[in-house]
Image (cartoon, rainbow, N blue to C red):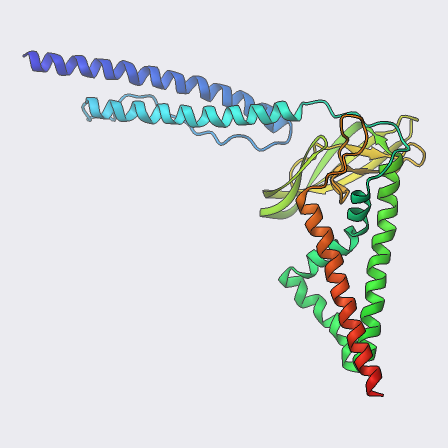
Length: 315
């Protein structure tokens, strides 16, 4: 009799613990649901959220201490997991809401590291595509075709290609360097997003949060963001950003011409320091891309020179 009474008391205690654990989970779920509504409005993927059933055992299954303790542990674990995801997302949103660091009015000095990164941007854009296997098979025949006419013809064609590649890089860098020297942070009047039919899966893309730019994997539809931006002199222009995730960065505009670019479209990932000048430090990925572009171009130029010299000696 006393044994049965003790067991019943343990079951009632376990039931109370399960109910308390479930109530705590319901509170966390409500907070996550409220945050998800804000995330969806802002174009951010919500936190995955399931529907949790109340704690009573299934019909015909007698309640036991072990069963109830298992339920309590499950509800507590889910509440802890969702609470951690909630805190992480709230911290990310608070970081995103941080005011944009001020940029001193131009003209301003552009660090040499920025110049190096911007000048190599066009070459890197070609090499990163050319090294992607499907595009390698498409590009290689066009680059190798002139060599069938002879080493000298192939070397001349490759030299012309390198000159054109770096000429395009220089032309694009000139516009970006002018914005870095004279541009200002534009006022975004309107933002619209259009999603493409291209679905990305764990594809490395640039994520923006104010001046901060990070390269992280993204899964979802590609998007094009069109921003209507105003300069300090009243000029209104449109800037287009093609990314995967929603754009939350900064737009630099030229107060004289009205032209502008998003900060993620600069090779140097620019950001101001505490004085409002450009911080000369470059992310490691930018150094790697710029150095690879220069080394690869010099290697191709060396091969061209050697082959041309050998062909000329043959005459």
